[in-house]
Image 1: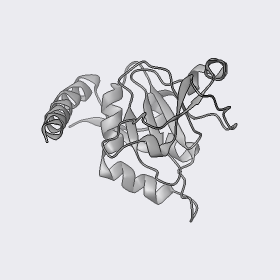
Image 2: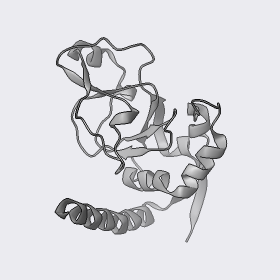
Image 3: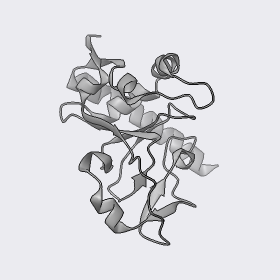
Length: 175
């Protein structure tokens, strides 16, 4: 298989993280998620979330707003958890979560599968700093090397892995 070795940032329009200011709390509004809301299947669990006012969400830059096709990646403490965003509902996330906005010429689900790969985690683990709260810095994340296949190969890989995901999810839902 032919691929290019590229930095992760070369696959993305931006790699950022959540707002660094403490969010204002609200009884309703836009859900605010933390790393603990990322479940073992790499999905967001919105049960028991806090909320922020709609005005807070509106004040965030577009690079900090998750859209369908973006990828979240936990970078502090329980780092190394990617989440593929397959919906377009508003939510806000803490600064301990990075957001990747893949380029239009990269299959974002392919990038998600790359980040799910144990080899990617192994490299992230080697790059993590700190002792009590190990952290992958945004700079380290941006500079991680990934194998970028042609868009046709990316699409083929995603087709196969998505079928496996759906089969596993259907099996899980039946038990």
